[in-house]
Length: 84
Image 1: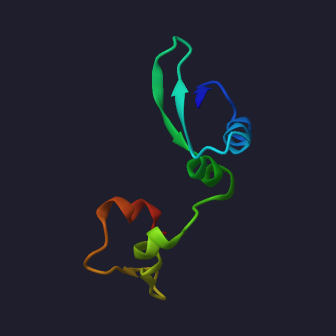
Image 2 (image 1 turned 180 degrees about the vertical axis):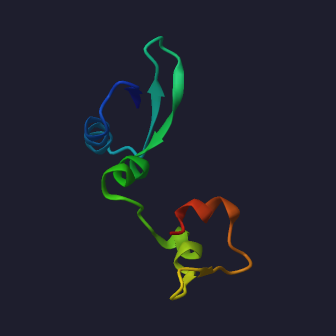
């Protein structure tokens, strides 16, 4: 499915759901590929981070009373943005 980069988030979500698709290519106004978008990414823009079985590392973070966090040694660095 191809979506213009000018499309609003809610309109893109509706289009993906209507087409029963999880991903779409985002097309620039010049007709080139601007990127790829996932339905989950769009939903997270509206409702916030969505955690599922693949996000078990984020759920394993413990927050201490002073606000510091304890992370497992196997915690993926790219998931640090989701902690907090």
